[in-house]
Image 1: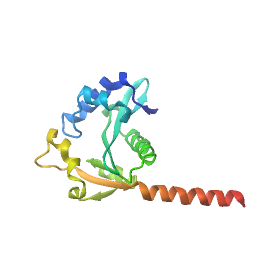
Image 2 (image 1 turned 30 degrees about the vertical axis):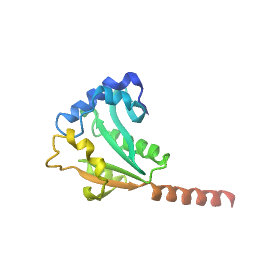
Image 3 (image 1 turned 90 degrees about the vertical axis):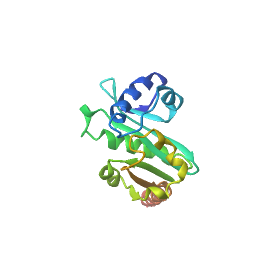
Length: 169
């Protein structure tokens, strides 16, 4: 089950993030940073344990970042990461942002979900502030990907109007 994170989840979130930050797959997040931003986090709970985590971060105009995505390795391959991204996408669609971006090693998963690869240099410079804490800061090998929220909203509106037309007939 996916739900919004609660304050008491912060240590579990940090432990899961730490699993991936030690190998440079995601950036380390301090417990204070997680607690300060707890409303931005989603968790995936299974058998009363947090086994997945991700967050959305706004702060660059109409651009929003999906970040800190991680699934407990014991639960990998079960579609939890995909479900986390889909839930984050739904949340992003409810904002006034135009574009969702991610820096990732899971390119094929994000491509399946409609994201497109872009040149990292096209992202605003201030996006890179977090890179100072990254193990790979001098030799970044993550892939930047984006998804147009504007296009998804338009597509959804067209589908809704088509359904309404069919229902009225």
